Length: 230
Image 1 (cartoon, one colour):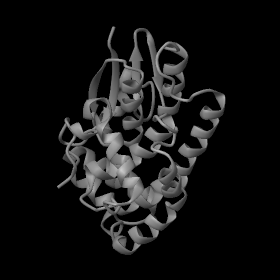
Image 2 (tube, rainbow, N blue to C red; image 1 turned 30 degrees about the vertical axis):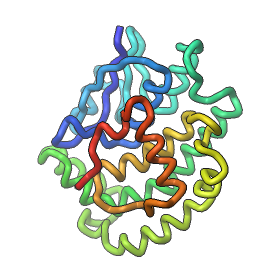
Image 3 (cartoon, helix red, strand yellow; image 1 turned 135 degrees about the horizontal axis):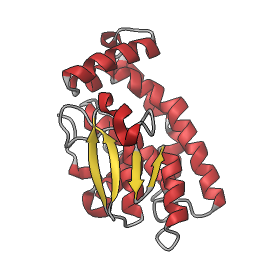
Image 4 (tube, rainbow, N blue to C red; image 1 turned 60 degrees about the vertical axis):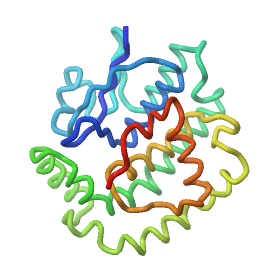
């Protein structure tokens, strides 16, 4: 039975944009597992699998429902051990958890703020209302204030990625010679920005940008199948 993946979309169901859902899409491709994507806007998330989770991604694999991108990755490795590993062992799993926390607490807050209007504008009206209410409460500002000063902020953002940049100067992927889940954690963040915002996050010759291009090409161009925001 084909796995079902519920992934976050805006007004265009062909443009999934959640960084967490992209982690799972790449994880499934990494394991060589076919899946059916179920486009899910913000206001439809509470109805996914009978309210299985407050957020997506959520997958259904036969009778099993799993939510949270990290939990899904663990489930895939444990359930399909004969297929390529996402972690490369317990050490890789622990390090992937660190990478995920770094993204969520050091990188996502900046991107989430400066892309507030970009995300809002790609949503259907009913989801725009939800997004405005929830994000203005979360950030304590009006959505329109989020992008203010973002050009200057991008300069500081790029500088903050120096450890990632220097790592990728030494090896093609965070996983070494081949990608692991940690790569998809970071790539999901850049895919989020790529799909919803025309803002250029990286210079073209940045080792991170070159690595991201490699990720986009993986699995018959799975990441590149969704065009970048104009």
